[in-house]
Length: 85
Image (cartoon, rainbow, N blue to C red; front, side, top):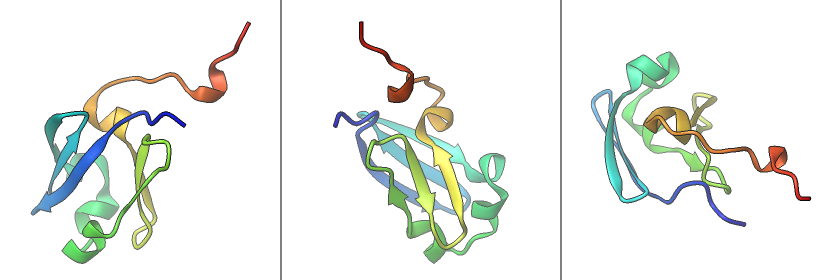
């Protein structure tokens, strides 16, 4: 299975998520994306899971999911939407 993104590192400094993905670094203000993550403890923020297909991040402690595409402003087509002829 090809991954949508190559996520190298995810770290937090205060309410800023530093996302290293596809060879680039993004600084994301999590308060703009998720009230749950903004209110979470540092430990809760650091316990996340990557989706197997590389499309998203999941924080089980706060029941939050975020799309990598949305966070970095790109659009991938869904594998389910692709058809073969």
